[in-house]
Length: 401
Image (cartoon, rainbow, N blue to C red; front, side, top):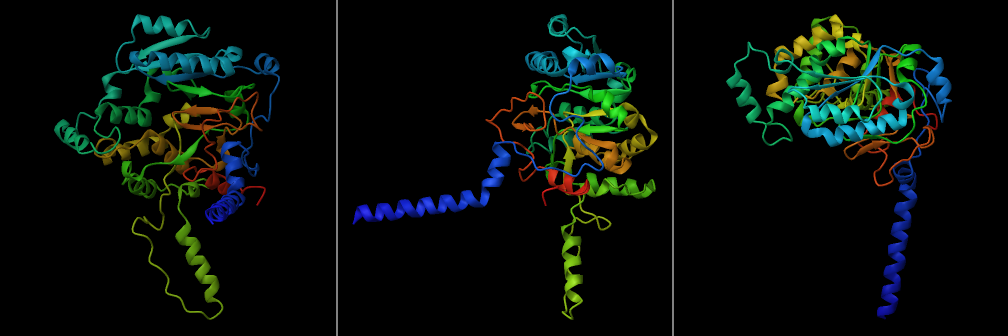
């Protein structure tokens, strides 16, 4: 009898597992085997599929006035060297773009020597002056300290240096003299890795196809870090009389509108409905879906950040005080600015690149060049808090739908 019960339990277990597998195999395949769904390429397409002739690319196309930029500390040296070695191996050994390293303190001679040993490219080291690093002097420092101390329950929330870093990357980095030399920049962080060869010059192709901003990962921000960022953004959009771009809907949660539209369609058949009230977090009928481009990797034209329109937005955010009263990150700030000021055809998704930072990675085995995707981490695209489904919708949809 016990044997029959065990057999029955075994078959039930196998049936349940098989059912779950059948229902979710496509998600498993895309997450762990990195199979990606094709996206409409009307407004944006990969600059390469597979490998280009890197020697031809490196020797034929002109170099752009561009640089890598990293904000780091002396104590981050091991992670810095790891990142440089990765980008040199995968790209820069062929293209020799310079590096700018910034620090709110002076770099040690040991740090400089170690960095210069792992690249043949030009390297510059700079200090971020207090005028770019510190909070504005016209705000009572005790109020800033109190506001930051209250954020102790949030990751990095009670660290003044973290708030200053986010503010610097949001509204000051492009004012540094070492950065102002260039027209383009590629942001690097310590301890990042690139898992595919980049056999073409991203700067050149961004210029060629009139792109202004490029990203590789888009995910949702933690709502607790930016409770009022969207509110101030909408207020600025209205005050500055900014037209709505065709990229703006990437940042909007339109589930409420879809629900109302369905009810309106059903109402045509003489059914009576009570239409729901807009959600409490709706601002002028718009709700932020928390999507943002992960800015630890971004390639962008610096004149976008240097523009009057961008700096008007930054001044509005500075006046709101959210860089210290809340934990506004530079990623949602950059992203909302992109949504306010650029059209979808001006933004590029580097889908063919392989990139990892912390435990998040994107690696397109079927699109990239000589990829070595880490199978210990899932592909970010199909995961629930990724925003690529929304990106695809804005760009014209997935082609397999």
